[in-house]
Image (cartoon, rainbow, N blue to C red; front, side, top):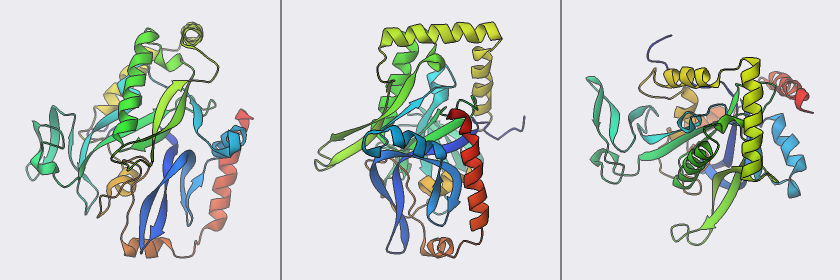
Length: 312
């Protein structure tokens, strides 16, 4: 295995509750009151929606996608949800310091050093709002690819806190059978003083509609028993994933650098939920050029449609 490269779950698409709009020559985030499921392909109008978005939206009330049935691929809660404090260089978008509130890995001229992490409020380096909680939730939506994931990235305290709690609780209540539980992502809203009484949307993790906890645990036990009989080793899968995450100091890829943190402003969507992508005017002009690959984009969309035919 190549050292220094974080081996993360394969990503098939993205889940967001925000979108990017152009204002004053910059692409800035705008909050939304529903989920959007996209592929990993961008066109001139933004991210290309994944076919699952349309399929799930057709079944939702008023076609507002506010719940998504999901399955965790790991039993360990911390493998499904990766969260830490992240300080990024606003010019390059690269991570400078990543910490857990106790210790941090900090990039210096002498290399990567370990320092105490007092949290952003108490850290001199984090003043100015450049250090934020950053969470990545990996979930499975496509049963035809049981190890492929859709990723929800967020810098919102509400989503990170709620998701972390739910994952830990369901893991404990099911005797560790988190990956076998029938779950769903649920969009919730609340008003706070900080939001000036306007709704703030965050992501929760609940049991699928019509299933109580006792039924869910019974289902999880049956699925686990069937998996073991087939020779599936969930513990080994968790261990391999744990080693892959630990293979690099910074769990970061180019897409996250550009999408979430490569900006010159602290503007965020609904307390950090959704995507944060204010981009320079030069980049905006570059993206506004006519798309020379529209035929290619049509081929991509057709391919994505074919990839989910097994779910129909």
